[in-house]
Length: 239
Image (cartoon, rainbow, N blue to C red; front, side, top):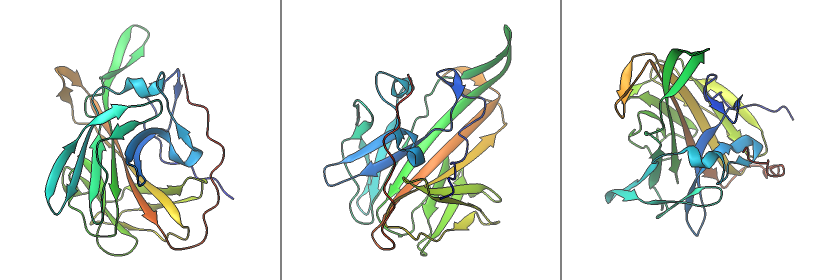
């Protein structure tokens, strides 16, 4: 089976001395929901102590017919455990908007300063969802159809990846309305990922930056279809 890597998080970002294609994503079961950091398609979940400790102040919100509820997050050995889970037709969205400014240097000279904002959303149905994240990907209400937005506006001509934990995946591009569609042949959890770079200078937590990089995932479960290929053994977290 051909292995499809998810979209690069950002080529300039260094984790443990090497560039990584990491993302955050949400998963839940009957007991609760967790926010993970790593590579879903490689069955890699970063740990604490380790790269999970680089997160400063991730936030999470549960949204449904009764409105929005802020959830608390408790860092465990390999995830952030959320204080709630999504029921039918509900969604959870989470992000880390406090990650420190990252400097890229040429010797002692700072060449550029970048901020990175990883985010994740989980849905429990194909029901249409209103975008809330700066970079968001949501179901439209039509089977297999999703919409990508940036600051609430459709993001056209943008690459979107979809993958299952065994490593099977596909890529597509949004149209002028930010819409992309995927067939999902397998049972189980899918994670979609989209990346966007904004070269407009700004400021985060009192520090100026030149470039803002965003990566957002959407997690969903599909009960029907072909039996999913088992995931490979869990990858070893980076130190």
